[in-house]
Image 1 (cartoon, rainbow, N blue to C red):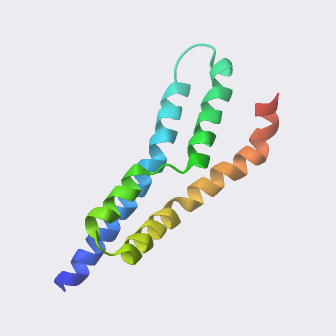
Image 2 (tube, helix red, strand yellow; image 1 turned 90 degrees about the horizontal axis):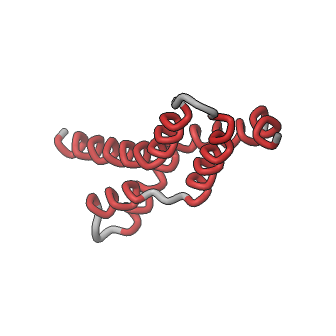
Length: 109
């Protein structure tokens, strides 16, 4: 029973790390676009910044947490990272789908 709780707790830490790494970019972009003023001029730069952040796939928390959980087990570490990426992939796919679909023409204008 204790091992099961420890297992679940570690997976929750991985999911939180992945969500934090990915969501931080979206939250910052949302806050900057909620400001008053000429947002049309900022919109393209903000969306491009989010897109660049996603493409760079820089996830410091998602890389650090598995190292703390399984420091001497590279296979477990890789499985934990894959689980974290799997958790955030639907959101990233949705963002990319929106950027290549309905928002593409508006942003290209």
